Amino acid sequence: DARVTQTPRHKVTEMGQEVTMRCQPILGHNTVFWYRQTMMQGLELLAYFRNRAPLDDSGMPKDRFSAEMPDATLATLKIQPSEPRDSAVYFCASAKGTLAGDEQYFGPGTRLTVT
Amino acid sequence: QKEVEQDPGPLSVPEGAIVSLNCTYSNSAFQYFMWYRQYSRKGPELLMYTYSSGNKEDGRFTAQVDKSSKYISLFIRDSQPSDSATYLCAMSATGSGGSNYKLTFGKGTLLTVNP
Image (cartoon, rainbow over all chains, first blue to last red; front, side):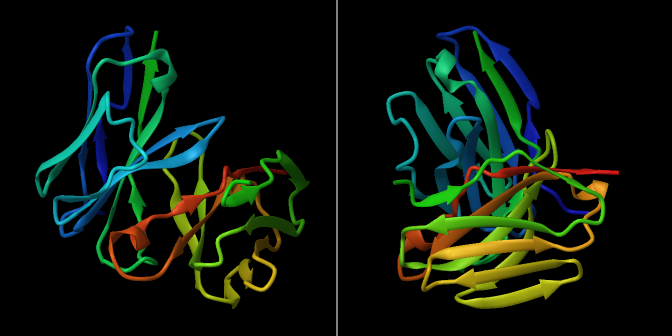
């Protein structure tokens, strides 16, 4: 069945290194979200796209994070340079419709550890 | 005050118990209310969705929304060990523009159902 895929599933890196996380949304879904989940803050929206155009990235630290959708089948989230406080699980989600109540389908997440 | 408050638990109940999970919120613009279930080391998945006030029932699960009190609940009847997971409430507003796609999540309540 159709699902959101994310790579890598786990990433351990040293402070200062660049990290790139990738997401393949469900085919036909035109809204893509990036979330970060930590014990302290819970699930936070970082950015989202509709039809590949960024709609809102206000949840993202602009100086080090960037999100793009090079094409309809790929979304990327980059952190440069990474810091220990970026350690979290990063989820990508996609939705088919354009309504506020449309179901978001989450990927399995990328577990990032920055040492 | 955070927009969405949810008791993180943990909540431990015996199999067959009725479970009540709750969230309060402060943003009166929220119109869409959801409950997501997240198993350990997995992405959240939509469990229940309600628009505006009222009740919705799906099998052993009942979602309630009381907009006058800014309070939502999820009830699980005849709880099963397979219900053991973290339950996240989520909400979004309606309106024009891109911001209405945003989901604001509670931090989640960890539920364990003991056989």
